[in-house]
Length: 291
Ligand SMILES: *Cc1c(COP(=O)(O)O)cnc(C)c1O
Image (cartoon, rainbow, N blue to C red; front, side, top):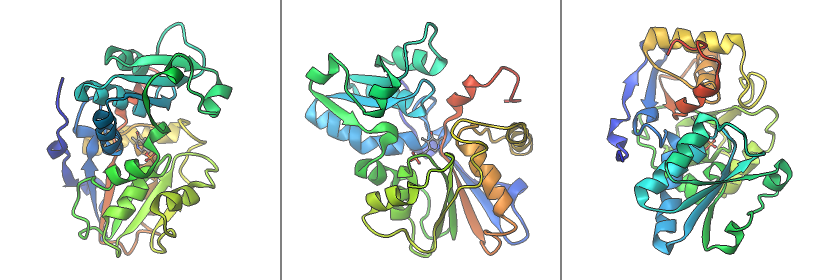
């Protein structure tokens, strides 16, 4: 099993995105491991340490294409931990590649109804076992602390941009970065109005005034996409050789590029966090992407 190589996360300038005013950089967290992708490793690391110390079985939640499920499965294998995934919805006749891969890493899969999932019920027989529950998406204090170890020079960038699902990564970046740096989070969910409050809960302080969440680039909502977004992903790859995923990082890159002429106009050094997630592109019809 391949080790996690944080040192392989390249930090480089993206000429294609730079403007007269702004140098745009990307941190390639997608490069640290083929299965334990991007920000998921950082969010998981302290949960897994705790589970290892207590000798408990790791249990977590996710959908059939979840980056978090696959990353947890592979990271538990690497750590020698038993793990189970509670998957939303009925057991499909044919598993999507994400689930096939998670099972191949040794994760037990438990399928539960949408209702049971919503209530985060732990199904039998797991409920009777000695388990360590990691919240969906790694949301929580330990997830934030882990995300705060995402490696980049904290004072060099005046703007750092990331995609937001639960906001755990953004909370971590807010902890890690110099106070003068603005963090811009691009929400990939439609109408996720409680995101700011959820980040404040993690931070245990008010949302910093120089940072913000943008809600304009969800492209219809979670895991939704348009022809325009796909065109952009292919164009970005052609110009820069950077692959993105349609659920998170493509929306981040698209949104950040769109704001270079306005919100980011006065930024000199802007960083895009490539948080991984490329495996999710396998749910797109074949031939959609050129990479
Ligand atoms: C899970 C994920 C995110 C969202 O991270 P949060 O901490 O939940 O906001 C962003 N990008 C990728 C590629 C992800 O897999």
